Image 1 (cartoon, rainbow, N blue to C red):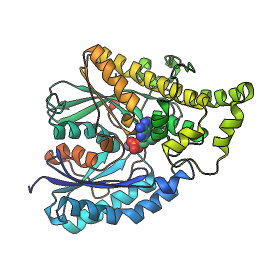
Image 2 (image 1 turned 180 degrees about the horizontal axis):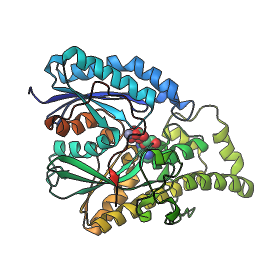
Image 3 (image 1 turned 30 degrees about the horizontal axis):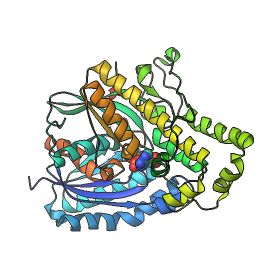
Length: 401
Ligand code: KG4
Ligand code: ZN
C-alpha cells in the first residue's frame, strides 16, 4: 500500500466533483463544479443536460483535484466512484472515467453508494475537527438522517467487525424534503435550488402564521410484502418499516399551492405575489428576493420551513429514542439549513443525545465524502468488478425488521 490516497469521483446528480482524501480522514482537495446555471432556468435538474455537463466537466475537475492535492495519478491507491443511486446517464460519466483512469494506472475501483457517502461526510468532518465523540470510533451506533433533494432516509449506522453496516429505519413515501423546498421555491418564483432561498428568507416571516400539519402515516397493512408503486419505493422497501418513522412531503407542497391560491382571492396578495410568479427570471440575490416578497409570502415561507423541520425532528428523535441511540447525524443538502441545525441541536440537548452535521460544503454533494466512505472498503479489499455499471436505484441497508 502507498500513502492511503483515494481519488473520489461523484457525478450522480447536478454536481461534477472530485477529491483526494488521505487514509479516509484527511481531505487534500475537494473540487465541485456546479451545474446550477444550466438547470436553474428550468427550475429543476434536466437529466440530459446533466450528462452533457458532466462530460464537459469531468476531466478538468479531476485534474484540478489532483493538482490541488499535489499528487499524481501514480501516487493513488484507489479510485472511488459513486455507482448509485442517481441519474443513470450522469452516474455513467463518473463511472466510465473512473474505470478508464483505473485501467490506465492499474488501480482498483471502489464503488460507493451516494447515501453512504453522505453519512461519511459527517464522520469525515468529525475526524478533521478532532471531535472526541466521533461515532466513527465509538462502539455505539448512530442514527443518520440523510435529507437531500433526492432522499429523506433514516439509517442506523454501526461500525462492526466486518465494516460499516446500515439498517434502513425510515424513509419518505414520496417526495424528499429537499424536493419540497425546491418545488415550493419554484412556485413562489424563487431561484433553484430552492433550499438556500427559503433558508435565507424564512427568518423574515412568522413561522406560526400558517399552521401546516403533517398527518400521521397510517400502518399500511396492505403493503406488507408488496412494494408500492411510487418512485421513492424503488430505492428501498417501505412495507417492513415502522410507520412512525415514515415521511411524506408531497402534501405540504400542495398545501402551499392551495394557500397561495386562496389568499390571492381573499386578501389581494395575488397582485403582489403575481409579480414574483410572473417574473421571467428569478431574483438574483436574497436581498432582491426579500424586496419582492410581501409579508404574507415571507410568513408562508417561514411556516413551510418550520413545519418541515418540525416533522423531520419529531420522527428522527422518536426513532433515536425507540432504538436507544445516543448519536444522531444529519446530512445531505437540507442539513445545510440554519434553522434545522439550531432546532436539532436544541432538541438533542433536551433528549440527552448528541447531534452532528457536516460542514456546509460537505452537506451538499461532493466527492470527499465518496473517497472517505471508500476507505473502509479499501482496507477490506472490496473492489468493484470491471463490469461495474450505474445503478440508479441502488439501495443502502436493509429494512428494520
Ligand atoms: O445533497 P444534495 O446536494 O443533492 C442530492 O443528493 O439531492 O442536496 C440538494 C438539496 C436541494 O433540494 C436543495 O434545495 C437542498 O438540498 N438544500 C437546502 C439548503 N441547501 C441546499 N435545503 C434547505 N436549506 C438549505 N440551506
Ligand atoms: Zn446527495
